[in-house]
Each structure stands twice: as C-alpha cells, then as structure tokens.
Image 1 (cartoon, rainbow, N blue to C red):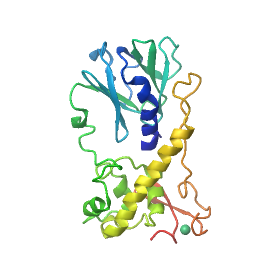
Image 2 (tube, protein in one colour):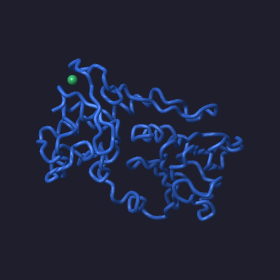
Image 3 (spheres, rainbow, N blue to C red):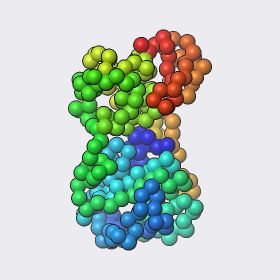
Image 4 (cartoon, helix red, strand yellow):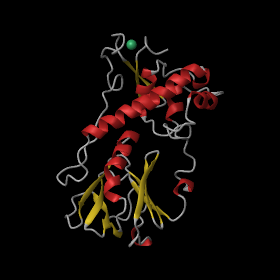
Length: 270
Ligand SMILES: [Zn+2]
C-alpha cells in the first residue's frame, strides 16, 4: 500500500509535468472507486493546474477553479501518457491536457479516490480532522508529549492515529519506534518528553530516508511501458521476525498490537 513517502515521491514525480498545463477533460471509465467519481458533475475543461500539493496521503491538484483531491488507496498509481494511449485494465481515470498528454490513474483494487471541490480542500470532511504533517514545526516532542497525556493505549497505535500525526502507517511506525528505542507496547501516556523528542526526530528521519530512497529508485512516471515501482526503504525491524537486530544481534520479535503486526527488539526498545 502506498504510504506517505510513496505519495510524496509520486507528487514530486508528477508535479513538473502538471503545473501550468491546461485541462481539456476528465475521463472516468467507471462510475466509482472508493467513492463516486466526479464524472460529468465536474467540467474542469480549460482550467489550469496551479500546483500539486500533498496533505497526509492525499494529493491536491490545485486548479484555477477548485481542487482535485486524489488518494491512491491500496493499489493506485499514476502515470503520464500520450492522451490517445489505449487504456489497459484498471486504467480508470484520465486527466487529459490540451497539449496531448494525460495523467492516468490505475487502481486494481479500487480503494482509491478522486474528488472535486471548489472550496478550500483543507476544509473538506476528509481532510479537516487530520493531525499535523510529520515535517511541520509544531509536530515535535513537546506536541507528542502533550497529546499523549492521559492516554492508556500503547504508543504505536497512538502515533498511527491520523488525528495525532499523519503519514505513519504500520511499517514506518515500527521503524520509528525502533530508531528511538521505544518499546511499542508501552502506554503512550507513560513516555517522557525527552523520549518523545527522540521519537519525533526518528519519525522525520525514517520518512526522509524513505522519500530519498523513492527519489532514486522509483521508475519514471512517463515510462509508458510500466507502472511506477514502489520502493522499500532498508527496513531494520519490520518484517524481520527471527532475524538479528542490527543494533544488538538479538532476535527481532513480532507481536500483534492494536490488531497490527508489530516488530521490535526486546533489548533495544524499552
Ligand atoms: Zn536490539
């Protein structure tokens, strides 16, 4: 599933190709993905793309009259193609530009989304409740410390709560807790401010490393022959049950926590 680093890499990949282009039409080949597609309800014809932004895992295609909100869901990916390129299976949406190119949205499992809003997208019901971005200045150790007071649940679901901080899925939450030496089973409300400072740094480091890895390994978005390949950061604990901890050599263990597989080192994480 695309996580924040993949979405950010996608944003960086498509942005230079989209900004300044004029939309000719929106082609929706199915009535809905996760939600109904805009289809004929919106006619963005003649509008210019002003910017491609990201908020959590949503891509915001800022146009002169409104915003297309796009979510890749479980399996979605974007590609830039010549407008006449015959659609392959699961090529559900084309955003066609007047210069003869198109942004093509392929989504096998159809959990993705494309929505249109003429209003401020940050006030949209899907976005309005979201917590701060992991790279925002106000997302720091002090913020996590304050938000966690009185929380009896464990720390891993706490940092995966999108109302606390956006962008941490199961993989990167496990990795950030390992890098900061925090046992994922600890109660969120029992962790000190100093340790939350370390965790806030680790969250940014792990996401920065993943975005950097994506920037170098993701395939060209204009490569018509294939899908942009998602990459995987060199993971230290996630998916490595029974392997040696890269710090101390003890076996990495796996436990279910909040319904999710959680990987950690019993010695390095306390
Ligand atoms: Zn260890």
